[in-house]
Length: 407
Image (cartoon, rainbow, N blue to C red; front, side):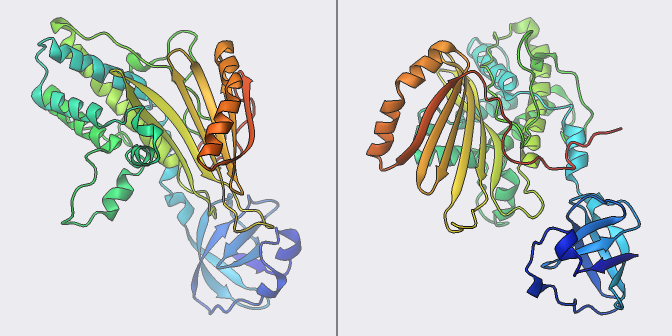
């Protein structure tokens, strides 16, 4: 049984609602209610959110913050008593999906570099399976160029086709409506994976359920930074460009097998970004983590982005605040992280450059950036450049249950 005490909830639990809202609940015996656990169980007590009201509850079984409980009203006096019917939090698919995908993820760079090398081999008259070649050509042609992402509409289109919104687009498509996934990165990876499977005679894989495979081509180079999973509490990390030599005729078969493995790792990586972008419990702000492949001169750079709407302040509830972080590693500049903050129609920009020459170059051109932003009507706040890497973690709290991988 769960005993609720709404009065105590104002003092022992965070006062999320005013006292006037804490009237006795208008429940009836046998009614079913859903409760959200707001804190971990401590000494048999935890706070619950039911409807718009916060309660302090005595709970005789383990619960953790973020769980949802389906409860039946067992009695109403002297305090409401609820009986747990089932724990719907255990049905949350995010945590098990993460456990399956984490060991499978791989950087996007090796897969894209292998595609570039495959097309180079095709120009050298290598006999590439036609369907796989067609899917590879379509995928690379669908990627945005560096020129395209430097204008607002091109960047908006690139973000929409980054792959993390694929399922949302499919849900929004009418059964007899046009297919809006021809430029979607994840959709094109899935098409290529299917074409490779047909060419290699292997069944199509589901990255969310298949076993992790060894992929030596995606392993980091000696001394390179490890590929971290996308987490809310970390800054985006620059990823160096990957370049591979095209295969000769004797290497083609093994090359296609390795490409198939790289595509599976890339799909797992995108799915991890999709899961990390899921809203936190009770969060109203928008949040996205994603990686954007950008083509330039026949090669592909991977830009990692973190886009978040910050909580509105009490004294200015109508003023939106946004924070965008970008990480990339461009030839000649080295690893870079940029952070843009929009608050009260004022934009502040910070850069972190790992190479000394790049940090000096950016610092010397901050006045130019200020001038150009002013010309397009943007009011600037602080502009700065730092040598090195961002040292502090990002402000968002990570999702509690996602990476609890204790055996």
